[in-house]
Image 1: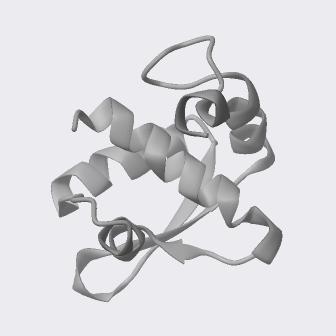
Image 2 (image 1 turned 180 degrees about the vertical axis):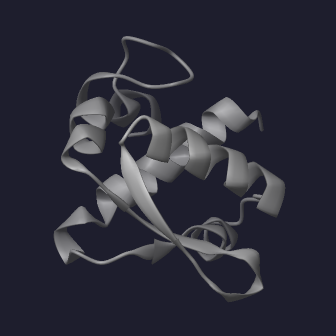
Length: 94
């Protein structure tokens, strides 16, 4: 799966967890969903999302990172996506 699609998946996972007001481990979440995400991909995705102020992240042991979505990230998920600009991530990923 291309990294651009994985970026949308990360934001969707963070969006889905927003009500719990906690940070979720990204690689562990991908594994639980039977998807692959390398540490290199995670580093790139978290850099993109932090730079755009869509999410915040903290380092975890063994190369994972935990993340939480920002209000800007919520707005982005509702109206846009990286893989298909102008289309809501929620519409793409249900």
